[in-house]
Every structure is written in C-alpha cells, then in structure tokens.
Length: 270
Image 1 (tube, one colour):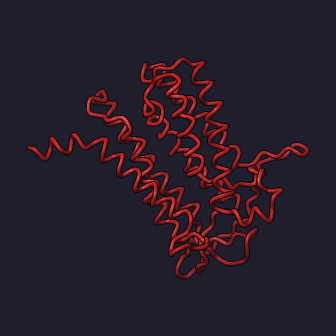
Image 2 (cartoon, helix red, strand yellow):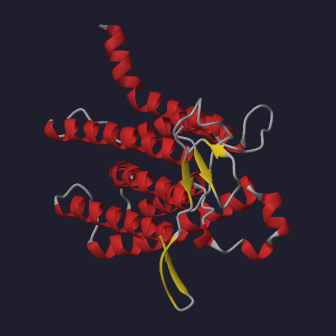
Image 3 (tube, one colour):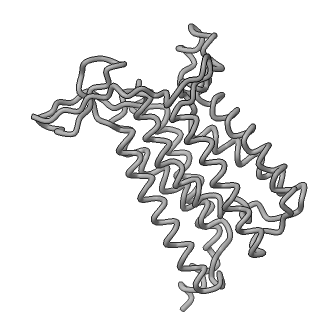
C-alpha cells in the first residue's frame, strides 16, 4: 500500500534571521519571467512602451498584485482566522496569497497604466498570460512544500497517491496542490499553442483579449472542479473559491462572446 509523507522544509536556506523559502522564490521568478517576456514584446514592436515605462509598470504591478493577493486571502478566504491572529496578517512569507486577488490587483494596475500611456489594456494583459500560467505551475508546487491548500481526507486504497501532511495531521489527503499544478500545465500548453498558431499567421485573425479571457475561463472552470476536493468550509453548497471561480467563468464567457460576436454573426449569415 503506497502512501506519501510530506515533511518538506519550506525554507530553502537561512542566513541569520533571514530565510529564503520556495514560495518566495517562485514569486520572484514569476515576476522576472513576466518582465523579460514583455521586454521581448517591446523589442519586436509588439508592445508600444519604452523600457523605462515597463520598469515603472512592473514596480506597481508587483506592489498591486501582492497587496491584493494578501487582502483577498485575509478578508475573503480566512477573515475569521486572521481576526484571531492579527499578528499573522502581514506574514506573507508563510503563504496565504489568493491568486484571484492578485489577478484583480494586476488588472487594476494594468488598466490605470494603459490609460496613462494610451495603449490597449490587452496589449499587456494578453502576453502576460503565458508567463503567468507557467509560474502558477511552480506556485502550486510551492503550496505543496508549505503544506497549505491541501485536499480532503481519503485513504491509500482508493487514492494510492494520497499524501500525509505532517504539519497538518496524520490523515492521508488529496494532494490538491499537485492537481492544480497539472491544471496549470494544461492551461499553459493551451495558451502557448494558441499564441504560436496566431504568431505563424501574423496575428491576422487574432482578436485582442482572447488570450486573457481564455486564461480566466479555463482557470475558473478547472479550479472550480478541483476545489470540490479541497478541505474548506462550504457556503450554500460551495466553498468561497468556487463562488469566485463561478464569477470568473461568467465574466470570461461574456467578454469572449463580445470579442468574437462579429465573427459568429458573419459565420451564421453564411
């Protein structure tokens, strides 16, 4: 009978009081990857910004996404816990960053920045979805090292790959962090193939916003399904994450329909 034990130390190394965690490394690498990806787009004239403007954008992107990710985690997902543990509200190095909040923060910063420099929001948002979806793969693995966002209790007979998170309890649970990492692999591959196909055609038939809203749609659908296995309290039959995912699916579907409505009407007329 197979059973995995998670007793991973989330700290890669420490120097005095300073600790470097896998979780923080993933965040740093994600921002670096996204920055380099947008620089590549500037270089090949796909993004009408200067490098100095990009530097300014990323400074605010980092602040806005991290701040909103933490606020979303504290006030939307775990308010009762943090009311009783106020000293932990700022301890982001221990995990507890809600992706949906981070996405909202990134959207707000990008909207304001796009208006300031008079560029299309999707000129930034669309290409960012490639490095974002890649980073999320490693982000969920970092959640696994932190022993957070674990799944419901199961057993090694029905679920041979179940994991005992020693920092949590002695029960064997669904490793939902790994399920979500696999989900993010699928999203990354889908977006990469879509972008590659349209780059070969010179973006002649590419509709701005498609890449961004496909990401939101796929993320919402797949996380909604996986989260049935998350060990979280329910509200009207679903947990908080699933309600947020439903909102993502609805909004993404509306925007994708609006973006492609003209093509659909032309096809229907024929």
